[in-house]
Image 1 (cartoon, rainbow, N blue to C red):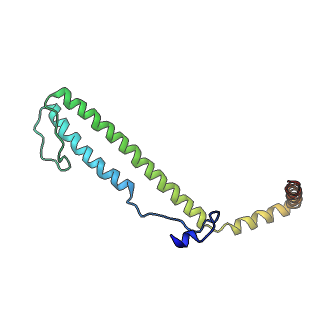
Image 2 (image 1 turned 60 degrees about the horizontal axis):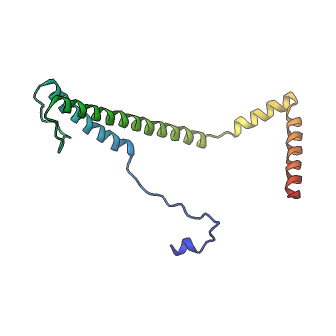
Length: 145
Protein backbone atom coordinates (compact mmCIF):
# COMPACT_ATOMS: atom_id res chain seq x y z
CA UNK A 1 0.00 0.00 0.00
CA UNK A 2 2.88 2.39 0.79
CA UNK A 3 4.43 1.73 -2.63
CA UNK A 4 1.10 2.47 -4.29
CA UNK A 5 0.66 5.72 -2.33
CA UNK A 6 4.14 7.07 -3.19
CA UNK A 7 3.12 7.65 -6.82
CA UNK A 8 0.92 10.52 -7.91
CA UNK A 9 -2.79 9.77 -8.14
CA UNK A 10 -2.73 10.53 -11.87
CA UNK A 11 -0.19 7.78 -12.54
CA UNK A 12 -1.30 4.24 -13.12
CA UNK A 13 1.50 2.05 -11.88
CA UNK A 14 -0.30 -0.97 -10.46
CA UNK A 15 -2.89 -3.33 -11.82
CA UNK A 16 -4.63 -5.34 -9.13
CA UNK A 17 -5.85 -8.66 -10.44
CA UNK A 18 -7.44 -11.67 -8.83
CA UNK A 19 -7.27 -15.33 -9.63
CA UNK A 20 -10.79 -16.64 -10.02
CA UNK A 21 -12.31 -19.95 -10.97
CA UNK A 22 -13.45 -20.58 -14.51
CA UNK A 23 -17.10 -19.53 -14.54
CA UNK A 24 -17.92 -21.99 -17.30
CA UNK A 25 -16.92 -24.92 -15.08
CA UNK A 26 -19.12 -23.58 -12.29
CA UNK A 27 -22.05 -23.19 -14.67
CA UNK A 28 -21.53 -26.72 -15.98
CA UNK A 29 -21.49 -28.13 -12.43
CA UNK A 30 -24.69 -26.27 -11.63
CA UNK A 31 -26.16 -27.52 -14.92
CA UNK A 32 -25.48 -31.12 -13.84
CA UNK A 33 -27.28 -30.48 -10.55
CA UNK A 34 -30.28 -28.97 -12.34
CA UNK A 35 -30.37 -31.86 -14.84
CA UNK A 36 -30.44 -34.32 -11.91
CA UNK A 37 -33.26 -32.39 -10.29
CA UNK A 38 -35.14 -32.38 -13.59
CA UNK A 39 -34.81 -36.17 -13.76
CA UNK A 40 -36.26 -36.56 -10.26
CA UNK A 41 -39.12 -34.16 -10.95
CA UNK A 42 -39.91 -35.83 -14.29
CA UNK A 43 -40.07 -39.18 -12.52
CA UNK A 44 -42.58 -37.72 -10.05
CA UNK A 45 -44.70 -36.25 -12.85
CA UNK A 46 -44.68 -39.51 -14.82
CA UNK A 47 -45.53 -41.54 -11.71
CA UNK A 48 -42.39 -43.64 -11.88
CA UNK A 49 -39.98 -44.31 -9.07
CA UNK A 50 -37.04 -41.90 -9.13
CA UNK A 51 -33.73 -43.67 -8.95
CA UNK A 52 -31.07 -42.40 -6.59
CA UNK A 53 -29.56 -39.49 -8.52
CA UNK A 54 -26.44 -37.63 -7.41
CA UNK A 55 -26.72 -33.87 -7.11
CA UNK A 56 -30.21 -33.76 -5.60
CA UNK A 57 -29.06 -33.42 -1.99
CA UNK A 58 -31.56 -31.37 -0.05
CA UNK A 59 -33.94 -31.08 -3.01
CA UNK A 60 -37.48 -32.05 -2.06
CA UNK A 61 -39.95 -32.84 -4.82
CA UNK A 62 -43.47 -31.54 -4.37
CA UNK A 63 -45.99 -34.10 -3.16
CA UNK A 64 -48.55 -33.40 -5.89
CA UNK A 65 -48.22 -33.36 -9.67
CA UNK A 66 -49.10 -29.64 -10.16
CA UNK A 67 -46.44 -28.71 -7.62
CA UNK A 68 -43.93 -30.96 -9.38
CA UNK A 69 -44.80 -29.34 -12.71
CA UNK A 70 -44.16 -25.91 -11.17
CA UNK A 71 -40.81 -27.19 -9.89
CA UNK A 72 -40.03 -28.57 -13.35
CA UNK A 73 -40.74 -25.13 -14.86
CA UNK A 74 -38.37 -23.53 -12.34
CA UNK A 75 -35.66 -26.11 -13.05
CA UNK A 76 -36.07 -25.67 -16.82
CA UNK A 77 -35.79 -21.87 -16.42
CA UNK A 78 -32.56 -22.32 -14.45
CA UNK A 79 -31.23 -24.72 -17.08
CA UNK A 80 -32.01 -22.22 -19.85
CA UNK A 81 -30.28 -19.45 -17.89
CA UNK A 82 -27.22 -21.65 -17.33
CA UNK A 83 -27.07 -22.52 -21.04
CA UNK A 84 -27.05 -18.81 -21.88
CA UNK A 85 -24.30 -18.21 -19.31
CA UNK A 86 -22.20 -21.08 -20.67
CA UNK A 87 -22.62 -19.80 -24.23
CA UNK A 88 -21.61 -16.29 -23.10
CA UNK A 89 -18.44 -17.66 -21.50
CA UNK A 90 -17.63 -19.68 -24.64
CA UNK A 91 -18.10 -16.58 -26.81
CA UNK A 92 -15.88 -14.58 -24.46
CA UNK A 93 -13.11 -17.18 -24.67
CA UNK A 94 -13.40 -17.31 -28.47
CA UNK A 95 -13.10 -13.50 -28.63
CA UNK A 96 -10.03 -13.63 -26.36
CA UNK A 97 -8.46 -16.30 -28.55
CA UNK A 98 -9.00 -14.21 -31.68
CA UNK A 99 -7.67 -11.08 -29.95
CA UNK A 100 -4.54 -12.97 -28.88
CA UNK A 101 -3.99 -14.22 -32.43
CA UNK A 102 -4.28 -10.67 -33.79
CA UNK A 103 -1.98 -9.30 -31.11
CA UNK A 104 0.71 -11.90 -31.79
CA UNK A 105 0.58 -11.68 -35.59
CA UNK A 106 3.38 -9.84 -37.41
CA UNK A 107 1.68 -7.27 -39.67
CA UNK A 108 4.92 -5.63 -40.91
CA UNK A 109 5.20 -7.70 -44.13
CA UNK A 110 1.58 -6.91 -44.97
CA UNK A 111 2.03 -3.19 -44.34
CA UNK A 112 5.22 -3.11 -46.41
CA UNK A 113 3.53 -4.93 -49.31
CA UNK A 114 0.57 -2.54 -49.12
CA UNK A 115 2.80 0.54 -49.13
CA UNK A 116 4.83 -0.87 -52.02
CA UNK A 117 1.64 -1.55 -54.03
CA UNK A 118 0.33 1.97 -53.31
CA UNK A 119 3.68 3.48 -54.34
CA UNK A 120 3.66 1.52 -57.61
CA UNK A 121 0.18 2.83 -58.41
CA UNK A 122 1.20 6.38 -57.52
CA UNK A 123 -1.27 6.67 -54.65
CA UNK A 124 1.18 6.72 -51.75
CA UNK A 125 2.56 10.25 -52.21
CA UNK A 126 -0.91 11.92 -52.26
CA UNK A 127 -1.88 9.98 -49.13
CA UNK A 128 1.28 11.09 -47.34
CA UNK A 129 0.69 14.72 -48.39
CA UNK A 130 -2.92 14.53 -47.16
CA UNK A 131 -1.80 13.06 -43.81
CA UNK A 132 0.87 15.75 -43.39
CA UNK A 133 -1.69 18.50 -44.11
CA UNK A 134 -4.10 16.98 -41.61
CA UNK A 135 -1.34 16.78 -38.98
CA UNK A 136 -0.41 20.42 -39.62
CA UNK A 137 -4.05 21.47 -39.16
CA UNK A 138 -4.28 19.51 -35.91
CA UNK A 139 -1.04 21.11 -34.69
CA UNK A 140 -2.34 24.58 -35.54
CA UNK A 141 -5.63 23.90 -33.77
CA UNK A 142 -3.77 22.66 -30.69
CA UNK A 143 -1.54 25.77 -30.71
CA UNK A 144 -4.62 28.04 -30.76
CA UNK A 145 -6.17 26.24 -27.80
